[in-house]
Length: 230
Image (cartoon, rainbow, N blue to C red; front, side, top):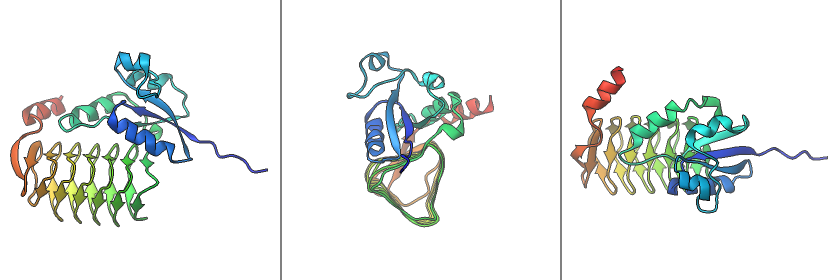
């Protein structure tokens, strides 16, 4: 008699467009079973979201089965740092986070991927690249060899990253942006959609254009330093 492999039960934190994309990838992987969302929006808890159940607020993860695994869909251009802090504040053990890789990806067997990260459809990841925890590569993204991406990085569709690029924590990269090889992108920076990054990007800055130039601050650096000191 052939024994059936038990599917991993997955719950997504945050019900929005990114969550639907992750849910779709889960549904196309026979190893997983999508149970629903957790979201702090009370109307979604009552009515569900796009025909999926919303099982409670974010802090209700503790009341779910210990066999459930989690992944976050909470990403946004100017919210990366706050979402990162929110997720950390929930106290979910590292062992309960699940990395989801869409079946329609091409990933070198030398790539290392952290926990709770989503790799969307059509992505290509070349050799010796490291991806951190809670990242979201939303689709059709190319990452060259020997790159390093930190934690809680979000890359919208069709981003292209050259070889030996280093991207620090809580960075957001807009759709169709391109980053030249050997570039360093500092923490909590924002790269605007369609930008061509040919110079290093300082932390907490917004860059846009072709070539990309600094146009503002993504986060108040003084407030960040003050909070980190507490």
